[in-house]
Length: 375
Ligand SMILES: *Cc1c(COP(=O)(O)O)cnc(C)c1O
Image 1: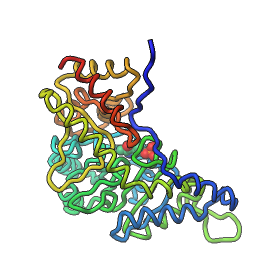
Image 2 (image 1 turned 90 degrees about the vertical axis):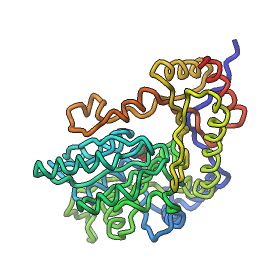
Image 3 (image 1 turned 180 degrees about the vertical axis):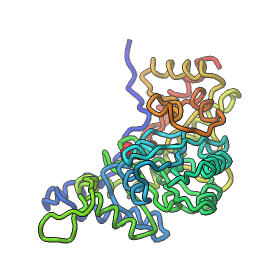
């Protein structure tokens, strides 16, 4: 039997200029430490996001969350509110700082933080005499969370919001780009994200001091002295000039990548619209998703698994939605405010191949297999 070529969930998609910027780094010996690609990449991100934001290119999105929480003053014994329906990298840095998470469930409209449950969690902690130090809100799969409501709660209770925009470069809320709403926002350029530097991330803020302090902490917290002197604990979290070259080229094709991912989503919804027991997350009014991953909701866990296995048999990668943090063995003892939404989405949901480099015949292969499962 002939095996069909593999279709990946979300694979890197280079444009035509990335290699040139990387070559330039070699030619000029800007292999290390920092260099012109890093500055240009940061400028390209800031120009794209508008709203006078300041950008620090870092080694990963996880590093950006770690530094972001540190800059918000999160430390030993503190509590941080965190969306439960997310990838573990949203929550792990809370533990790096000796703090504890309080997980909060999602709402049906956006699959992101429920404003009601968030407020319930905040009040519960205030009543316990323990004011949370930060809120981590995630634009999951590129769909913006309810920016107005979540940030209004942040202001009402004076709790800073860390905007985890790792999956949402190119998304916007009421015409304003995601990554510009949080006291601090972060992006990821990991290999499977909408654009990639093979591995990398960024911390973004309209507070320039946050940006500069992030760079200071990311480069070993060196004091201004001719010798190596340190008054604070530092990290080695800066992005390399070689990888930033890839990022420079990727920023030039970002709009194309967003359009291609949205085209995938339209293709799936259109081709599967007659299967009435399958559904997709619509874009609520005013929200614009980059559709990083196209996610399908099936009627049951069994149907989801049937589709996933049928695709796997044909060499096609698909993946269940993120397993909520409050269900993860490593976090099972943490406090959480949940109503079953993310558990239900996790059971019934499947991420379909979503790369910007998929062809129409790739998408059609996926559709035909889903149809053939006889739903
Ligand atoms: C990818 C991702 C991260 C972490 O980014 P890395 O660059 O892989 O460290 C954080 N949060 C979410 C929601 C992500 O999807």
